[in-house]
Amino acid sequence: METAENAIQAALTGHLVFSTLHTNDAASAFMRMVDIGVEPYLVTSTVEGVMAQRLVRLLCKECREPVALENVILPTDFPVDDYRRLGQPLYRAVGCRACRGTGYTGRTGVYELLESNDEIRRLVGERSPSHLVKHAAQAAGMRTLRQDGWMTVMRGLTTVDEVIRTTRMD
Image (tube, rainbow, N blue to C red; front, side, top):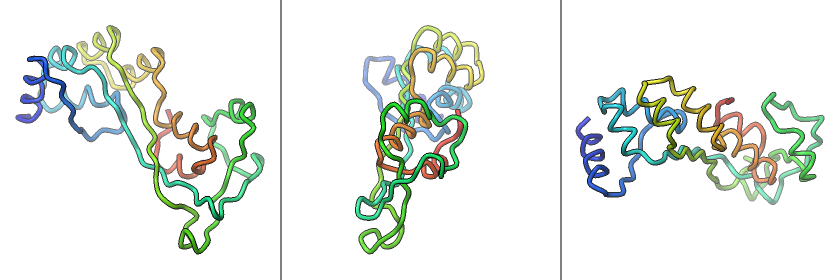
C-alpha cells in the first residue's frame, strides 16, 4: 500500500510513473490497485494506461516445419479468416542441434495496451468487474494478449500451442 500511495502522489504532482503489478491482464490492474487500498477516484485520475505482457518462445529457424491448417487443433478464437488472407504458413516446432532439440530459440513478447478513456474511468470509479473494463477497452480498439499472440503465430514466429500455453482465451 505504501508503494502504491507513493506512486499515486508522484503521478498527482505531474510525474510520469512506471511500475509493475502482477495481474492476469491489463484490465485487472485497475481493480488490483483498488484491492490493495488505493481509492478508485485516485486510480481513475492517475492511471493513463496499462501494458500487460507475456513471453512466448520463438521457433527455431533451422528446423521449424510448415504444417497444414487441417493438421493443427485450433481454438475457437483463432482468426482463421485473417490467417487465410495473409497466406503465411503455420509452423510446428521440430528440434535440431541448433535449438538443442526443443524446436525453439529465444523469446519475444506479446502485449496488451489498455489506454484509459472516459468509459474505463467510469467503470473503475464504480468498482466494476475487470471483465467489463476489458470489454470497454476492446470496444475502444485494444488488442488483447491472445490476439497479439495470434499475430505472432501468423507471422511464423511461434506456434499455436505456445500462445495457448501463455495466454488466456478472451
